[in-house]
Each structure stands twice: as C-alpha cells, then as structure tokens.
Amino acid sequence: MRMYDLIMKKRNGGTLTADEIDFMITGYVAGEIPDYQMSAFLMAVYFQGMTEEETLSMTNAVAHSGDMVDLSGIEGVKVDKHSTGGVGDKTTLIIAPIVAACGVKVAKMSGRGLGHTGGTVDKMESIPGMQTSLTQEKFFEVVNKTGLSVIGQSGNMTPADKKLYALRDVTATVDSIPLIAVSIMSKKLAAGSDCILLDVKTGSGAFMKTVEDSIALAQEMVAIGENAGKRTVALITDMDIPLGHNIGNSLEVIEAVETLKGNGPADLSEVCLNLAANMLFLAGKGDLDSCRDMVKAVIADGSALERLAAMVEAQGGDVSVIRDTGNFAKAPYSHKVVAKKSGYITFMDTEKCGIASAMLGAGRETKESTIDFSAGIILHSKVGDYVEEGMEIATMFASDEALFAAADAKYEEAVTIAPEKAKEEPLIFARIT
Ligand code: URA
Image (tube, rainbow, N blue to C red; front, top):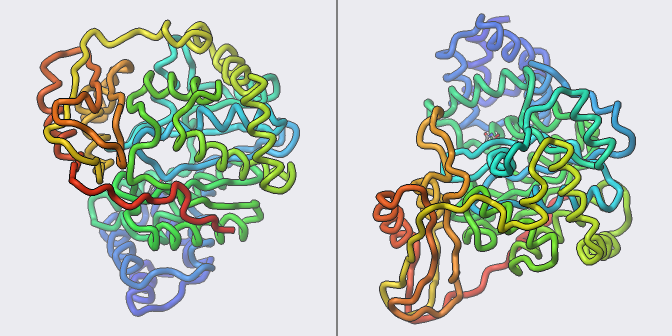
C-alpha cells in the first residue's frame, strides 16, 4: 500500500477501505507517513468529504492509536457527555453531579480552555487543592465512592488526534465536518463510557456558526457513536449568547453551585435540565419526561449539590468554597462596563465576549500562560434586555487594573444595542438520535 495512491483515490472522490485507513493512521503516528502527505489527504477530505463507513473506520483507527480506557472496574452504566465548546459553558459541573445523584455513574475526562472557550478542568482547578490528574485506581475509587469524577485527559490517549489536530490547525482543514466528527468521537470512544450525550453548540461563540452545520456535525457524530455500539444522542444548543451570567473560572463554579441550589439563571438551568435528562434517558432511567422530573427532584432535595461537594472532597479540593462560595479568593480589582447608548441589546458576539474574559486573565494567551482563576466577567444585561445609556451592563474582574481598558473595548465591540428588540432564539434547536 502507498500513501500516494490513497491521497489520489480520495482526491478523485473514491472511498477508502478500513484497511487503507488503518494503514494511513498507523503509519502517520509511527512517523512513516510525513506531514506533507497527510496534509494533502486532509485537504482532499475537506473537498471530497467521507462516507459514513470511512468516518467510522477513521474514528476507530484514531481511537485505537493510543490507550483505550477500560471502565469495567466501575459498576453500572457509565454515561459521558461532550460539549463542542463555548463561552460560560459550565454545564459539566452541574449535570455530572445531577446524573450521579440519580444513580448513573459519570467517569469523565474533560479539557482545558481553548482559544476563546473555557475548559472544565481549568474551572475545577479554581477550587483550591482540587486534583484533576488522578491515577486510574484513584479515578475509579472516586467514581465508585461518589458516583462521579471529572479529570483531565491522561496517559497516551488518541495520539493520532493530537498530531492530526496540530496539522489541521496550520493547513486550513479544521472546519471539516467529518474531520471534526472523527476528532471528537475518537476521544469519546477511547474514554470508555457506554453512552454518549453530545452538546453541539451553535452560534457566534461556537465552532459551528450555523444551525445547519451543527445538525450535520451532530448527525455524523451520532452515526459514529451508534455504529461503534454506544447509545448516542446530540442536542443542538444555543451559543449565540454566553450561557448564564458568569464567564471566568471561579465565577463559573460559583454559578454552577447556585444552579445546583435551584437559583441558576433561566437559560443555564433549562439547558442543564435537558442535558441531564438526556444522559439519564441514555442510561435507561426512563422516558425524557420522567428523567426531567428526576433532575428537578435531585436539585430540590440538595442531593445533586452534595454529589459535587463529595467529588470535590474526594479529589482533594477545599469543599468550604462549595459550601459557601463567598470563600473563593476574589479578584483585587473590578471595573464597571457601561452601556454607551440606550436601547435593546440585540446581539452579543459571543466569541468576542470570551476573548474579553481571556484578556482579563481567565484564559491563556500562550500555552505557557497561567490562568488567573478569579478573573472574568459577570453579565448583568444580555440579548433582549433594555439598557439605558451609562447603565452598568457587566462587571469585569482582574488582578491588574491595566487589563480593563482593552477588555472593555473588546466587550463594547461584542455588544450591539439597537432601538428594536431582536427576535428571541430557542435555547435548544434540535435533538438528533
Ligand atoms: N474539538 C475537537 O476535539 N476536535 C475538533 O476537530 C474540533 C473541536
């Protein structure tokens, strides 16, 4: 077999066999196929696409390029969830404890912030002492004891994805639906859960900017999951507005705790209710309506919040910040962002909101940057709200006052104020099974 022939086959619109795809991925990870040939192949996929069989074969090959996590040491059905990334997306910290409180285990590997989006692992590390890197033995022990554990990706998982992702990043081949589907689903298959709920974000703060593209991506990923023998469902959820009111690491943990107490913002609470109910549904706990009732019950009786506290404690975190979020270290400086004119907020460029928060220290500028856990933004007014000129529409937090001017300017660019109220968009656009 020759990589040259496989590139030509794909370039001409042909379909690769599973053996051909295995040859290519194995050879690439081993360093036998050079980046320039793989780049040409990726570009051919970008234009020609891949069939459902090819996408599944490539996902399997990438998943098996490294360690496959075996969760059989944890009793019961294990359900995973993946968000394609957004701004203010603290849903894992809310729904994992909810699902655990309903008796379904969550043994989850999460990511760090990427670009303008935040990452669950960074948010968890804003809790003093919290460990996000556990041995497999400890990971299983925490899940068996508390019903859940969320950690960073460990070991040598999906090395092919790491190499391919870095190459796609510099060859203009990131935004290919089959390649994104392969990248995400290979990691989900390697992570070992029985069922997968996908939260495909759509809008200005998401990877996929249109509902049509988000649905196409979700359909590909659900097909891969089901063909790989995992029960898989996707929800297409809104990321055209930051989710909830808080952006930034400890600020998002605080909002997650409030939501678990039943006091969360309406949009975040509604999205979490549906995500958690779908995870329970996938785990066979009942129909969606009864799963929604279970979610409401474990919020109302406080058991979901107790699960979060139990996981934090088991992973070495200071549980006093969960019991009283006033114990989180506060940023030394705050800054009022005011409306520059009166009218309705009609649009918030959510990517720019995420960048503004990162500029305050909540995200990384380079791979080496450290995160300021207390930095971020609290949004007081969002799309649909009427604001008066000079009114405080957001508060920014940082450890260096000099950061406010540029972040304020970025936030001003993000927010559109107009005389007419914009049409309300749904929070959940579709459910793909
Ligand atoms: N997230 C991933 O893990 N991979 C992609 O290709 C895109 C988003």
